[in-house]
Length: 366
Ligand SMILES: [Zn+2]
Image (cartoon, rainbow, N blue to C red; front, side, top):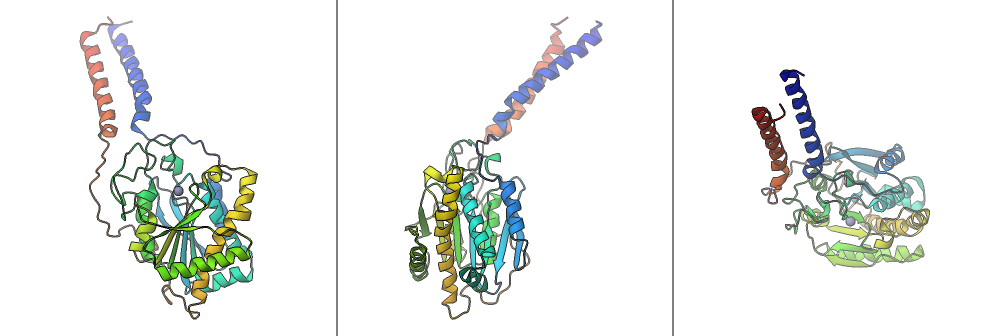
């Protein structure tokens, strides 16, 4: 070998070495992307199911914003645009797939069952479903489970009651309130859709309904009382109800932005939340969805009893743009800036450059 070809050979070897180092350390600089979940249906499959379900007369869909990774956040809408407004969402905790499944079953009953009760809801109410707020889920590790080391718990990222937290915790509230695009999209939707009822659906810590403690008490009493009556007529045990404050929860901001009654349903307990068997699926169909349905019917009945006129925003039609993320949130500086994520790749590059230069200088291979 000539000196030039040796030098070229070593240069190539050095680059291979640097490449290996960079690939090996890449996981340090990026999010983990383990996915241990095998839900009954994947998010992509569920999205197609929702699109098919709402591809019918008097139903529509909208994109109300985009997730951190740029996935669209879909809203599915049905009912009377001049009716009272009801908003239900699910999977703000991306791993809570069974919550999204319950919401799908609820929407399916509403738009396909053609029962007098379902027709009553569609005539009196304008209902919006957001089945997968956190579409990124485990891809971004913001799934609120211990498998993700990095990510933001979206239901702790809202302004009302936000507090700092450990970035390595599975309930990390984000670097500052409303730092996440999903949070901004939801806040914008609260302001543009202006529902009377907002339900934020979860699984894992139930079964229970946590309602925001400041919610309009007369509406709360009226609706929960109706819910219990409806549930018992369906031979169901209704969800028990507990008032709760906000620790950066969506229900806190929803209330602050003008929604009189906001609640968080924990539809299923820990034992069944992350199990995707036929047996659990049957329970979603026969127990958990009907229990949620009792609340939806009660909410709608609130509008029926209001002299036939919707209680929410009479006669106001839906604006063209549902989500507008430019709402005025008092952003704070990134308080939990993770310097090592930025510094580590630079350090690797500098070390690689130094090693290359020193190898060339001393030519100890010759
Ligand atoms: Zn949750």
